[in-house]
Amino acid sequence: MPHPLDPDLRRALAERVLYCREMGIYDFYRREATAEPSSSTSQPELREEMAARKSAVAPVIVEDSLVSITPNPEQNANDPSVALRLIREDLGECTRCQLHQQGRQQIVFGVGNPRAELMFVGEGPGADEDAQGEPFVGRAGQLLNNMIKAMGLRRENVYIANIVKCRPPGNRTPEPDECGTCSPFLMRQIAAIKPKVVVALGATAAKNLLTMNSSLGDLRGRWFDFKPRGSDASWPGARLAVTYHPAYLLRDPRQKGEAWKDLQMVMKFLGIEPPKKTAD
Ligand code: URA
Image (cartoon, rainbow, N blue to C red):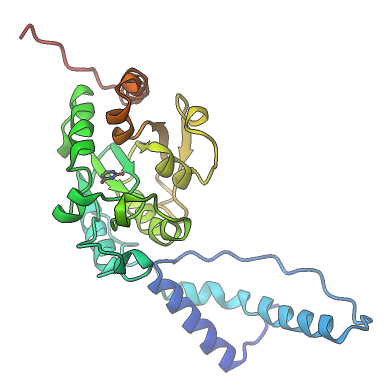
C-alpha cells in the first residue's frame, strides 16, 4: 500500500529530484526497504536511525510519479540531431564539476553524424580541442582521422565524443567524480545516436563506459554489450570494443598493429571492407 506523503516531505523530494535533474541525473531506482527493526531494541540511537530510515523508504513509492514529471528533455525526440541539440541545451554552460573553473575555454560536446553506426569515445579534451571546441583535432586527432580513413570511413561518418567535456588542467586524467558527473550526458548522447558499435579509446574511456577496473590488455580483442540505462527499449544496444588511445599510439607506434586488429574486428562486425590500396 502506498504511504500517504507528508506535504513537507513531498516538497523536499521534489526539490531533490530537481537538484538531481540539474546534475544531469534523470533515472531513479527503487531501493528495497531494509528489514523492519525489532521494536524491542533498547538503544535509542538505533531506534532513531531505524525510524529515519523508515521515513526515507516510504517516499520511494512516490518517486516514480515525481520522476515522470522530469523526463530527459530529449525523451520524445525521434530525430537524433534534435535529441543531441536538446542534450547540449540541457548541459548549458555547465558548472557541475570543478573543471569549469580550472581553465577550460569551452565545452567540447561531441562531433559527427547523429545517426552514426560507429562512435569513438576518448578521455577528455586537450589544449587544441579546448581551443576549437571539437574533440580529437590535435595530433592524436590526426592519428584518429587516419585510423578512421584506414577503415574506409570518413570522420563525418562517425560520431566522436569524450568521457569528460571540459579540458582537465595540464591534460591530467579526469578524476572519478568529474567522469561521474559528466558521463550521464555522454550516455544520453549514445542513447540518442544508437550506434551499432562504440569504440573506447584508452583505459579511461573503457573503464568509465564499462564501469570495470580491468587492464586494457584484458579488455581489448573482445566484445562487450553496451546499452545506457533508460535508453529506448526498441534499440538492442551497441557492441563495445576497446582499443589503444591514439595519444598512446603516438608515444609507442609499435602498438599500431594491435590497434589495427581491434579496428578490423569492428569492421568485420559492421561489414566494412577496407579501401583497396592504390599503386601510388
Ligand atoms: N584526447 C582525448 O581523449 N580526447 C580528445 O578529444 C583529444 C585528445
